[in-house]
Amino acid sequence: MRQDHARSIRSVSTLLFVILVAGHVEASEESLIESSRSSTGCGQKGIGSGVYTLTHDGIERIYRVHVPAGYETDVAAPVVAFFHGWGGNENEFAANKVVTEEADRRGYILIAPRGIGSGDPDHKANSWTFSGSATGLDGDGINSRVAGDTDAICDHDMTRDYSYGSCAASKSNTCSWTQCQADDVDFAASLVQEIKAKLCVDASRVFAMGGSNGGMYTWELGQNHMSAPHFRAIAPLIGLPHRGYLDAQGKDMDMPVIVITGMQDNVVPPGEWDDPAFTTTSNGSDRFFYTGATAITRSWAEQHACDTTGSAVAFDDGYDEPDCRSYCSGDPGWPRVLDCRAQMGHTYEYEWAWMLILDFFDAHSK
Image (cartoon, rainbow, N blue to C red; front, side, top):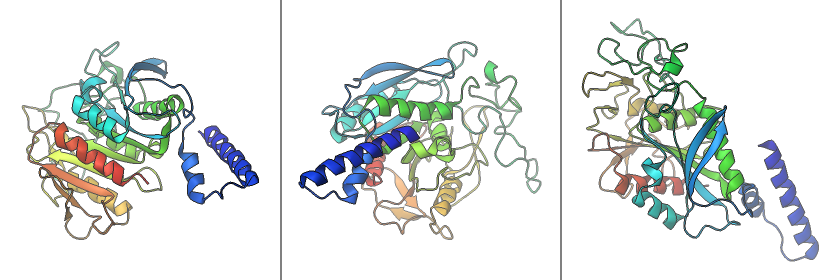
């Protein structure tokens, strides 16, 4: 990455020298910044829309690419990386007509990788691993002030054992429910680098979003210092961290986040407004514990130096369906941390949610 950056700076310096000697224009600081944003894939033949593979940690990973209509090899384009839900695949988002048509209209490259689990040795649902999901441990341990509190992400007595065989040596209880074959955080960073090398990408406008299990993993990508620098902003959809995992952004610079959840979701419930308590799955017999939407957005707002002493303030996003609020209401334009909740269950609602997410990304593209 440092070599790519150095190469980009050398190219920009050479260009500026030629222009100044010729006496055509005086280069501005803004043009220098714009040039350094372009990836090494600019000017290359690149790849088209389709399904590709990337070998990572000795495992062949599958990902789908949608190159927008009107894409030009010398114009740096923004990217959205999609992460599917538990048991999904690369087609969950990137093959959806609503998603691709809007990406075409706004000029976004889409990349959608497939999680691990369906093959050897697990033969389970494709999944994304994030904090607590493979070990089964929550982020705050046992709270002695709470009667009957545990250090687990689920109620052992009520929840089925979804453990993957690859986690046999690393899991701490029967609450484990995602794969342990590969480092998903490192994979996401490698995939972004792969796309930058194959397509003309604006490195300052690479975004991550995911649904359900993919949404939970999207939080991890924003929290983890190994992956956070690769993304400008994140958008978890009906996905929250497991109980106690309240870390904010994993980089020094701002990392805007919009989270969209359903007030009728009994799989990953967001909780009540301004209530920082954890929430619990209530569909069937399973009882998984999650950090509520209030607690996690409060944590991110605090790291963005926003005022969290009062209630989150309503924000008019221009859509009828979700109720969006923020502790960063003092931000000009769209707040950097936005909590949106709709009267829906555990569904994606592409028709408006995808548009809202892209509006948020567009607003935080600088």
